[in-house]
Image (cartoon, rainbow, N blue to C red; front, side, top):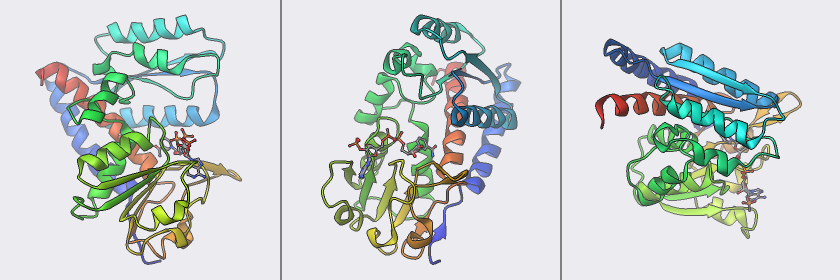
Length: 284
Ligand code: NDP
């Protein structure tokens, strides 16, 4: 293997130590940052994510509440729960765990979260900030991925960045963040022709497709930074969208799965929650 590992566990541990200090500082002023998670139904993967978020909160001293709602929850009941957390002074961040059961309207639910409590960065107001490059809440996964890219020490301005996957929660905001870093950005998706011709040009390649081992070594430029967002369960194991064995022979830097972007996503959720509490306390 020639690539340097971008270690999400180590980076998260450093960031979380800093966050714990900021939580302490808030507590000295009588404020405990609070995160509320709403989980509807019993999706096993969502259960794991929610537990990891609760553990992350406990680790840095953030107050956490989880509203577990049954599968048959109605849209009105879900929105009433969101409104209750909107009004709750102890709560600075609200996260609606996705995906919701099919009968619920995700966009309508996300629109109910107060933009200043939207620590996922999914509200249209925050999506607009992302698009215009104005201050708002930055979506956790792209924020974490950008932090990892910066750890390479490369000057990002002018680099070719290719993002594979155009979802609202990963691909599109990732492309916007890289654009703000003055990269030349290509956003690929399922209708892209000759995908490998694009990925082979990338100095920075971010993959968020949801297909295990989708990107192979022959699709990667030697020395590239490869960020694997994918989380796929195969035969009881978690695998990324990048074929680690072949790509790590070609890339300059690579994120592992697990222990890469997933870990950083939760750390960025904690950071967004602490920031929301600081903003409410200091008004900045
Ligand atoms: P979505 O299913 O919403 O989006 C997948 C994207 O991949 C779509 O834009 C789709 O294109 C594109 N795609 C599908 N097939 C191809 C193909 N053959 N060639 C090129 N593009 C293709 O997924 P998400 O963005 O929500 O998640 C992607 C992955 O990241 C999943 O594995 C998910 O579990 C993981 N994830 C990990 C997180 C983390 O913290 N590490 C956080 C969020 C997600 P089109 O739009 O044309 O359909």
